[in-house]
View 1 (cartoon, helix red, strand yellow):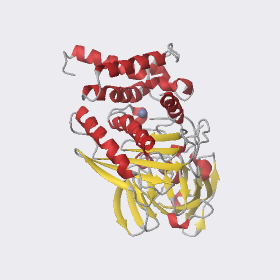
View 2 (cartoon, helix red, strand yellow):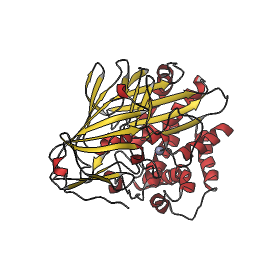
View 3 (cartoon, helix red, strand yellow):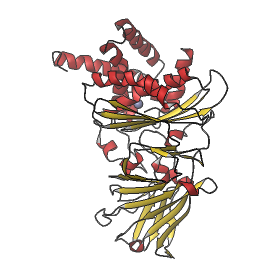
View 4 (cartoon, helix red, strand yellow):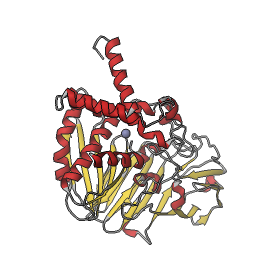
Length: 430
Ligand SMILES: [Zn+2]
């Protein structure tokens, strides 16, 4: 997980070296979402979305967009980009009341056959201006004929009580565009893709990059890793990046015991160009089986490869935690008012510890180098508040963003201690 702040800090280091919903019984709504979008029909930077839905049995229903999504720690209110919201029964319009930035209450809901709305994008070209608390890697960006960065939480919503319904999405696209994503692809026809997700949460966890194909597939053990790139400059980036990260991922696989817990993983990489040498801005968000990375920089292939290498070395290890090991707050994520678990120190700290430990364990780095990295983390953590337990900081991470980076310092070191202790207790077995 890497917030823009984390990135900012990372780059700094690198360069010096009232929820209002009607709770419906999901059995009453036992149903599916059928979404349709046409990327060819973008108008004034907006996409029109159509949702077909049947069989709602309640008099009122509340339709929502997330206030926040997993991996970011600030409210984004994705409903703010929604316009012309309409609920229809055949050709009749149903009474709708917007009850908040992210929620619409629909009356006579049992008659709903369709919902329609327009979506504006969250940013245009990824550039250097960073706004505190605005997570561009959780937003979408539409550029006709060039690229569509799609975070599904911005395009698609859900009914209160319908978070666990299956979702089917049909996207019409320019014929020369390719959709890179880890989302389950049901079919692919000229100019059209069909995807599905078991739940809304799964849909949101799988961003899509639509662009002219610049893609390389790597078979890493049992996992198909896709590197998909879009470059504003038109340069093909995927082959170089794939060549750079392949050996890393092989070592990561060995480190994790040879078999990986996922059968596919996708790196989505967006690059926009500027000409100010030595200056770059990055942003990104990791998901269970993919990572979306945004970078604004000069076209320096060493820099680009290093950037993706740095991301891959941390983010890929998230397939262990929180993907496979997580608490109920993550399992049943509330998109309108999430409660933070006590375990961010584990999700981020252990992931960062794996990144730290893998090279020395796999023999691609010396013990001295490992120890000097440990020493650096120990020194750097002194700049943060040493009186907040990491469990408490995990719970209050939205309010204590100033302390967030310590999960990558003290958090990693706590996991090093945990590793040592487990070795002790298991007499070297764990
Ligand atoms: Zn992370």
